[in-house]
Image (cartoon, rainbow, N blue to C red; front, side):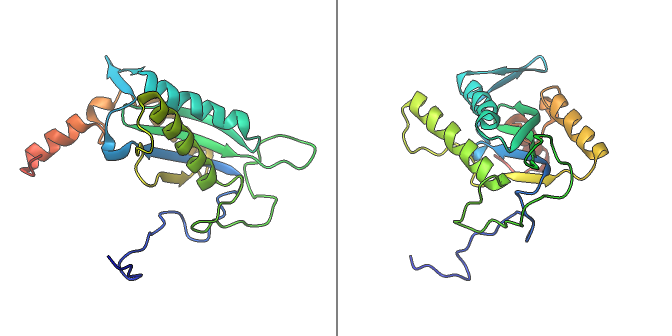
Length: 197
């Protein structure tokens, strides 16, 4: 098949021109490939992670351990997706506090194929890669895909929004029975609309 730029191009779902290394909070959602429930289950509205889900949790924690520029906020590993809030910090050379405002370095806009150290896309790419590698090693499935191609992100703009997102993450396991990412909910919705499987 011949490559045709007008048909074969990847569209970014990132905010055009935004500096994703800018200090602030970002809400991310990452889905398993085909939304397959790989990481555990929700039993009696409580999350029960399996060994693969524990790998996801371990690697998320490790993400903050190995990167001084980030701080983790509320997060949860769900059966087939992950939600988390990550803060990108900026230091002024003497303080290691979170700057909740304007970045103190020159804008660094990520471009396809060109990573920007400390940017949200680079952080998420490394996290997804580390999880995939460890899970493939544990399942003896080298090179197998684990995640959907991209991820969803939202720039958190104020404290009220931050608190709403935190509560959404905390409540996610309790709301699994009605979650649109739950394959059982999707099957019922398809049946109700006559869309089939």
